[in-house]
Image 1 (spheres, rainbow, N blue to C red):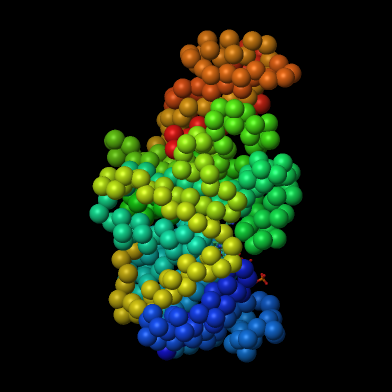
Image 2 (cartoon, rainbow, N blue to C red; image 1 turned 90 degrees about the horizontal axis):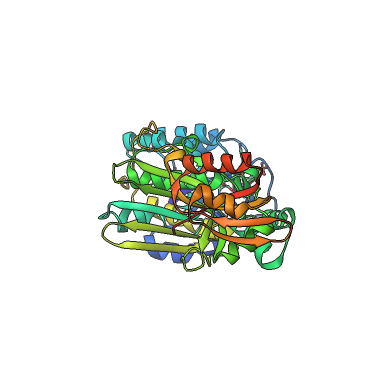
Length: 408
Ligand SMILES: NC(=O)C1=CN([C@@H]2O[C@H](COP(=O)(O)OP(=O)(O)OC[C@H]3O[C@@H](n4cnc5c(N)ncnc54)[C@H](OP(=O)(O)O)[C@@H]3O)[C@@H](O)[C@H]2O)C=CC1
Ligand SMILES: N[C@@H](CC=O)C(=O)O
């Protein structure tokens, strides 16, 4: 029997307990031992739970219990999650977490502690919810040098954009529904401002390129500025708008990393990924493109990934799984102004297309009612685009929105 503790009994934590209880026989058959939930830490009472007698509000009961070999952190947030996880690893307990904020902020440090203590620190559920991505990248694709990782990494924003596009739903109503369904973060601004997707691309970039990428090193934009008008024009340009996290290796060895809404061409594999589903493309030098698709948020999909990590820990109690990256200073990341993109612009004024063509060269434009014009430019460094768009604005054109076009 392997005793585990679960810290947090919210959306994900209750799903983990449910799977461990309802799939007990199946899991026993796969590892030859029972996974026993010895303690559940939460601030609230759960009198109706079948394991109500195992709840505690005191972390010391978990850390001091020598029978507990694996601790699952599904509380979320940085504190006290960081302190609890660090203490668990230092006490020789393996830790499984779904907390991407924690991994993106302290991953290098916690992986180093796990290495020193010869225990496991696993976080499959931290990216892509129920989609296997950490283990496949770390194991199945290990023979590859990764050239690029790009994807729809946030279920809540993808759900909101889908509801806006397909049902004409207002942004706020779609967000409320995502919250009710358990997809959103406790503070949903992490979803809609792009921070959650940024944390996830940071984790994938750290793993792919071997040096920790911290979220504050990455240019991040969310979806709050996206309007139904942009959605309609994007469609006319043969694209759909998605929040994308992307990291690319450049020829000089530097990486180009960003989180931002992008126009995604209909022909891209990421264009038809809707609702809370995520899609992640990993481009390896041997495999070419490999695409992972599935539910990126929600109770049971996320808990499924957590339980897979628990099983991995159970079968490697005396052996560390090789998952590691070094700390990073951001000196391998290019400035956002050097990053090259074709751009979509929606603007208002007289002779917008003529003025834009004079600045940007060949453009594709669509005239819309009320002296509004939408146009797309060719690829250029973002800094150059900003200079030109400022000139267009100085020439009496009101810039209503600008969105990158992803070559995805
Ligand atoms: N929901 C999802 O689809 C996904 C979530 N994640 C991540 O998983 C983690 C958990 O998410 P989720 O389950 O949705 O969050 P919830 O807010 O639903 O659950 C968190 C639970 O932890 C409890 N908790 C928080 N702080 C403490 C503490 N100091 N001591 C004891 N209990 C505490 C909360 O109690 P109380 O409510 O009383 O504060 C709550 O019951 C987050 O990091 C999230 O980003 C990852 C992938 C998908
Ligand atoms: N809030 C997150 C939950 C999963 O990571 C999301 O919407 O993707």
